[in-house]
Amino acid sequence: MNFRKTLKGKDCSLTRFKTDDAKTADLLKDLFTENEIAEFLNQEYLKNRTKPKIRRWMKEKADHPYEIWYVIKWKTRHVGYICFKWRKHYDEACEISTAIHKDYRGLKLGFHSSKLLIDYILDLKKFKYIVGYVFLTNKKAENNLRKLGFSMNNRLHKIITKEFYGSDGSDKEDRKYNLMVIYGNKFKPSLPFGE
Image (cartoon, rainbow, N blue to C red; front, side, top):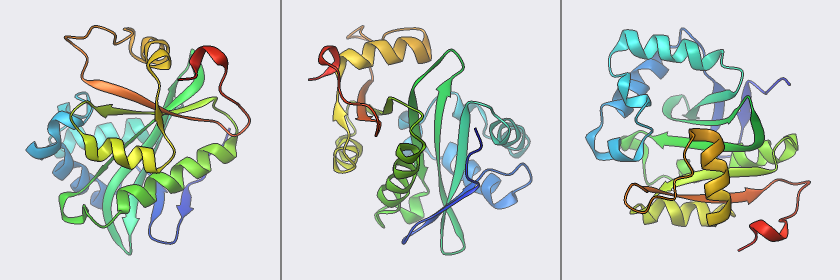
């Protein structure tokens, strides 16, 4: 399946990662070294804090068969990233992940870019579920996901987390995230997964 290289919205646009984009590399360096959001980001991303590591990481993500990465642009500025990803062995669900540079938070760019990507994913009719993991204490992110149509689903949390990360995430002491879900356009919630 071919995925669009550019998604244009009223308030922002999304452009697929390119391997030689210096502005995106600068943006990622700022995001991956910002202490305020470090606990909310995937810890694998934070291993890439130097320009050479970030460029290698961007090359891997730009060509990845199961991860589609976009830079969020506002006017001509690179303000964040957003992606959706799934697993080779499990494509019933895709996970979205996003981060906005500290200078552009509060402009609703996270909301608008997420809405733009979610609408695109729904139009693909490829996934049964679109999921987002939200840090337990990050109520602002949870509220934003609810505004986008996500709802909490503990049963799917176990199933999808096991498929994506090898553990079902049910250990109360180790659990850091809740899973929120939107059902794909052509699918309706089935009884076992409804809340």
